[in-house]
Length: 361
Image (tube, rainbow, N blue to C red; front, side):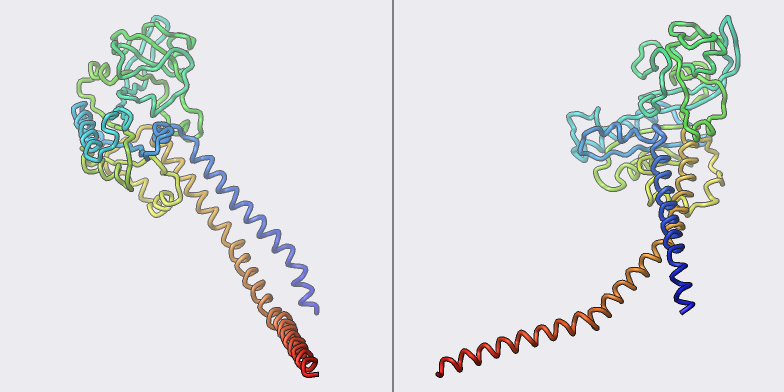
């Protein structure tokens, strides 16, 4: 009697414990979903797809510091994509809407105006870079591949304040390694926690890759990004592995990289991801994405662990309920049903007998 009473007293605590663990597991999943949606740099395939029924994938190719590429390699890969699109008969009359790409590299330079000077991180870009990286404009405009003038630069807010003490600088002149350039705008860097941690280069600016090549003749492309069709599973990633001159570099599929299956892959690589032996210096946006991957993997693992006890308790509850239902069916419902059926049979037999007896009379 006393043991049964103690079990009854413990059951509410067990219920609250399971409820708390289930809510904590759900909270981890919610945090995972919120984190996975923070980085705009990982969403270009979704933006490019729009209302199209065709699936797209975003890929990033990162080259080792001693294996950088030139524009001829980029254009060759572009032609390969077009050939593959034609081969697959994917909207051949409108190739321009089926893929978009960008490339970049980085370096350091001395930057100065008549009001100030300093060293800045240069990100040299080409293609549709600011579609992949929609940094918020504080003033002015972006630089683009189709610009006729290549002497245009985009400053980040910190560098703008150092050089001019303000952010409305369109048309102002800035010298980079002594060469004059025109400021077209000022941007604000990403404010999410991962990007802030990943960007450690201080003040910076963006300029066209062609202009940077005039400053640094030995410069080469270290990051290539593309969004292309994915009509069947793994079409885009397999094509890039086959056709892009990646060498000892790494190709990352950005699309869906925060989903359950991809996070499981990250979990299996625990400890190995920090062992970098390919000579690759990832740009800050990729380091930010890898930071988010690690946090999402941790949250997924916590969610699974927290859900184990409530899941086991639920299974046991279902088993007990089914067992009790079966016992009640065997002990109560089946005998009652059997008696009811037997009584119905007796009633029908008696009515038949009475009907037959009345007919004989």
